[in-house]
Image (tube, rainbow, N blue to C red):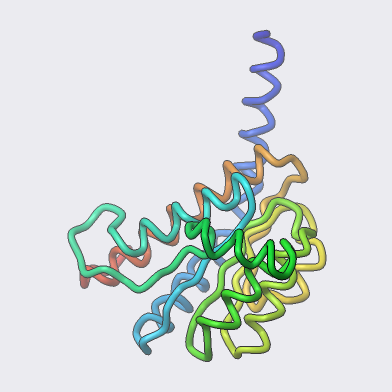
Length: 192
């Protein structure tokens, strides 16, 4: 067991060290999100399974707060309404779960963020396609090469790994880094 755990920790550390190349993009994306909120936009997030949890986590940090007492920022997770999701999946198809919601709710000035490990799930791809049609800015949190979702992303943060646990671990770091940027801005503080 300890060899397995040592291997897991080593893989986590390698992925985390590889994330250094993403740090300039994190700041750019933070600035993009600030600009969207400053202009009255809303952040919409979605994902499947553990990535749905990451989407909800990011939404919670944005609406609530990360580390500062500050005003709430507008964000919606499209994974939280079981009635809507199952209605769309039943009446249309599971592939349409996010695209129908994006089509109904988003528009220019909004940001649509998809969390995915592979970037290949049909409902993720269709959700990003719908966001593009609606004129929203698209943000992709993925791993590896980003799959077909990458071509639909205006901004992307790709974890340097093809392993689901490593990708999701890094997504947590990235959403926390963005939360810090947004938190400071909304509280009127400047990050050094």
